[in-house]
Image (cartoon, rainbow, N blue to C red; front, top):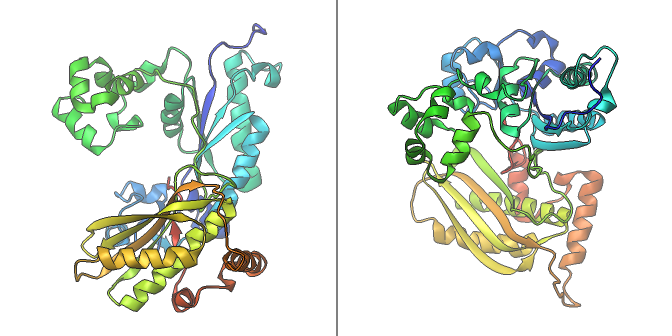
Length: 424
């Protein structure tokens, strides 16, 4: 029997829902199990891969590549469009399950969350457990089995003493596994891994490390500090400590993980929506309709939060991917009748080329609960409240500005949030 004293170190768990979008699609159509699946759209359709199954990853298909490229690499795959509003519901239910097991749960993305089980050994101890480590491992396996049984979704979990090590471990545990990294074993586990396995190392840093002859995390851990600083600058110490398996157990601030995650009163960051056109657009009237739709959406979301914005930003991307943004400060507002004329003016001033438009976006920032004095004759607030009540009862598309209506009827889906559903 092991000592009843709980372990003095952190128990951080990173839970990752395996090929999340694909797994949800397989719940709707079980015949897809074991088949190569790509979620994001139809072959050669304009757009990118949102998620893909393990069966096509070995062919080079990855989230973020174009659907055209995916069709070239895996012409035999089943291509599926994304489902609006479905994936977030599954993700929320998984978070609810995780909260049954851990007193601290932090959402990182739609398919990833962190839990802190530090000090929970005594709570979950069973006679069959040989140690505190075994207690935590057993309980985490129980969690993944519960998610599979109740929601039908496979999940992988990494357990370690730091957030970064738990993240790496969850990747090594795939598919549908649990990997526990004991304290003191971190460097040994990391040493043979490619440098890209460490969060914070991207393709540019990977290339620079390769030029220096560094291919594994073990080599990075032993690299002279001056060389690490040359490559990573101010982040050098943090990166090298990570390569040695050392890091913080702080889970950080919970991120908006679900589509248009708007918490009441939240003034952090910005509220933004974008529209990528299926075909590049040049017609001014069509562009103004889209700007109207986007203005409606961001203002609707601001009212849901109970905040106003003092800065409006327009994002414009040409057909050749040249992207620019323009901003303007205005009186605090959450009304599309104030925002739309501003972004329309910003667009006229920003569009200096004759190329068609590929993407438009609107962001509200400098958010706050401002004391806005309205005129007794100003019906804006009453009008917005009435519109929002109708949308609450009959759906968001029940009412639109006249300038938005034609586009709203023609579009296939609402403009996507800039807090996109991350892929896994």
